[in-house]
Image (cartoon, rainbow, N blue to C red; front, side, top):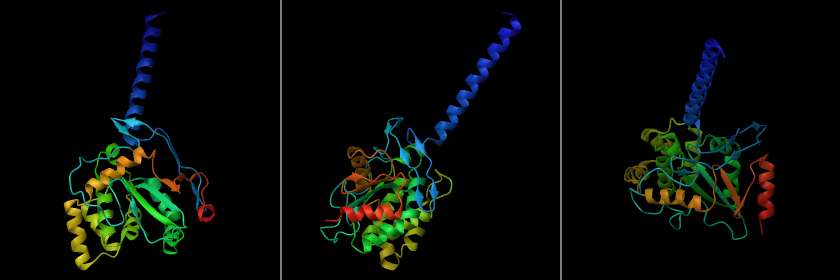
Amino acid sequence: MSKANADRKAADRKAKIDAARAQERRGATTKIVVAAVAVLLVVGGVVAAIALGGSKDKGTDTAGAGSSSSKGGSSLPKGATAMGAGIVVNPGAPANVPTLDLYEDFQCPVCGQFESIFGLQIKDMVQNNQVKLVSHTLSFLDNNLRNDSSNRAANAAACAADADKFLQYHAAVFQGQPAKEGEGYTDARLKEFATQAGITGAAMTTWQKCYDDRAHNQWVESVQEQSGKDGVQGTPTIRLNGKDVSLQGLTQQSLAEQVKAATK
């Protein structure tokens, strides 16, 4: 082999290595604690595909570990019956209706898409006592996005639950989700969501103290930990009477049919 050919091959190898390293750096920036994410396609209100696979990133198990270090208060928000348990939005629901568990992270863009399609429908189901809704607000994306917005938003939503405004706050956060993933939520923005949810006056003062003190933070972390024990692989995860609802091709009509079929 001539020296010129050897030099060219060496240069080619270096170029390929450099390109691979650049791709790896780009992937590390955009990876969201999942091994595979199928694109969420919204066509005529249809969720065409949502796939979340498990992976580990710097010690983080997908949807299994949170962001903070057990600081803050240990009180339970209204609607939660124990550490690790989600918030029961309508505890007075009839015994014959199915339980709908929602596992979401407020920084999850696919969760935002899910909320835009199914949020009002699920709210109507709650108001009409067609389901018992249990919300599990997770914070695993904080680890990968290198912020604490999921944890703080979950704390803020828990404080809103104390004011009987959980669903309203939940909707406001997803409606105000940043277009750029990882941008997160400022404290001021989270307070704006409280106002949008209808929290005012003395209730706002109480909400603010609850949020500032992180009164429910240990509960927030326990919900994240419990989700891993419950086998939640990513967000959103939807369960009807404990069984996963496939999001592949899910429509408002098919969700309503599944709820009806699960009603005793």
